[in-house]
Image (cartoon, rainbow, N blue to C red; front, side, top):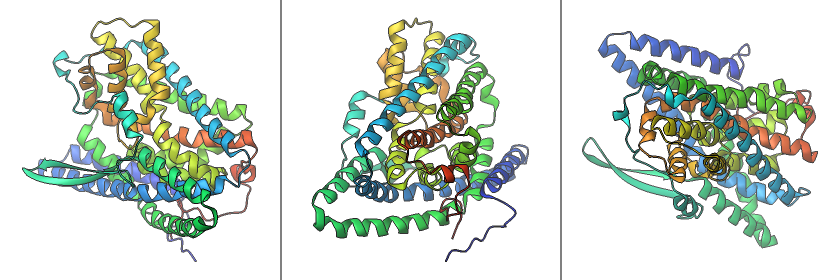
Length: 441
C-alpha cells in the first residue's frame, strides 16, 4: 500500500510551479544581498540542485537497462513490433527536419550574427568538441554497463568520477534482451529477475521524484544567481531567435501534429507537463527520462512495452531543441558574425547533421558537442562556439523542455497511428492508476 504524503489541495504541477517561484525569489534575493549572505545562499542552492540532479541521474543506468530489456521481451507480444520501431525512427527524423527548417529560416530572417554586441575576443574553441568518428565509436559500449571513469584536478587534488553513455547502455540492453528472448526457456529466469529489478528501481524513483519541488527551487535559484540576465543584452537577437524557434516547435508544430492525428494538444500538454517542467529546470533529458517515461505510459496512455523502448531511445536521439533549433541558428550566427557565406548545400548539411547526428549529444547536459559537430561539418571556425557559452545555461532550459516534449510526442503519435494508444487514459476518463512519477510512496 502506498501513502500519498502530499497535501491534497496541491497537485504535482502546482508544487513544481511553486518551487520555480520560490527559486526565482531566492535567486533575486541573493543577487541583491550582502556578499556573505549571497555566497552562502548561492552555495546552498547549488548544492541542493546538484544533489537532486545526481539522484535522478544515478537511477538512469539501471532504469534504462532494465526497462529496455523488459521492453524487448514485451515487444515480442506486440503485433508489428518491427513496424513500431521503424515508425518511431521515421517520426524522430521528420520532426527533427521540421525543427531544423524553422531554425534555418529564423536565422536567415533575424540575422542574429549581424546584430551581436559581443567582443570578437571572446571567441575561443570549447574544451570539448564533437566528431562523426567519436559518434560512431560511442555506439559501441566500452564495457558492459557503458560506464567510463575520468580523473580531474579539483583544488589541486586528483578526483576520479564515473560517467555513463545512455546510448551505449541502450545498445547493451537491446543485445541482452534479444539474447534472453532468443534462448527461450533458459532466459525466463533472467527476464523475471529483470522485471523485479525494474519494479524496485521504479519505487526508488518515486522517492526521488517526491523531492522535485525542492530540487526545482534550488536549480532555478542557482541559475538566477550564477548567470543572471546580463549576458543576454549582447546576444539579445540570438537569444530571441532561439526561444522563438523553440516556442514555434513546442506550441505550434507539436499541437498541429497532435491535432492532425485527432488528439487534443491541451490534453497532451496537461499530461506531459510534469516532465516538461522538470526538463526545463534540470537541463537534462537523461535526468528527466524516468519521469518522461512514466507520464508517457500512465498519463498519456502509450503501452508500457512500446514506451519502455521508445522513450529511452528518444532521450538520446530525439532532441529538437539541442540538436535542431539550436545548432541551426548558432551555425548561421557564427557564419554571419565572421562574415562567411553559406550556400544551399551548407543548409542541407545543417539539416543532415541535425537529423542524423543528434545521438552525439547522448547523456550530456548542454549542446556544445552537437554545435561543434555542426560547425566542423560546415568548416566554420570552432571558436564561434565560445561566443555563445556565456548564455548557454539560460538557453539550455528551453532547449531541454522542447527535447522532453518531443520525446513524449513521438511515441504518442506512433501509438495512435498503430491503434494501440489508450484513448480513455489520454482523455483522462480511464480509472485512476498509481502514477510513480507523480505520487511518492
